[in-house]
Length: 115
Image (tube, rainbow, N blue to C red; front, side, top):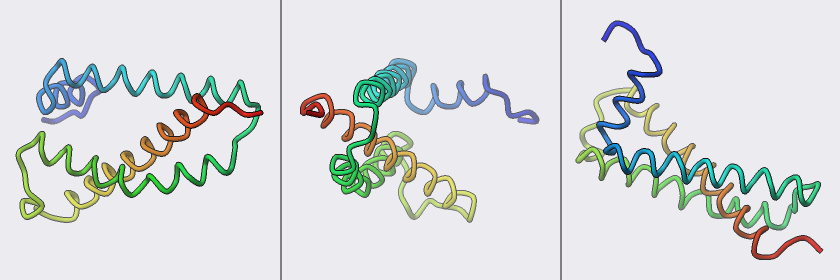
């Protein structure tokens, strides 16, 4: 693999997760993002109370993201081969934490709108 292109990355993710699951995850991420933008526009500001509660969910999201990737790739933590693998897993954990925080904030804001 000489060149790392968008098509190559897309093919790798489709191979890891399967075409159906991968595109379902992309669609869900898109819907959550649209919901988050809608909430921010509707409320004109961030509710810091809801934001703090969303941040409390971040460790759970990080662990679940790493667990999900390990499950999908049939790997174990003992299979990590070096610093690059650890950096990738830290990136997965960070993405899971941020995504979970955005999801929790959006759900809270849709269920209990700002007064």
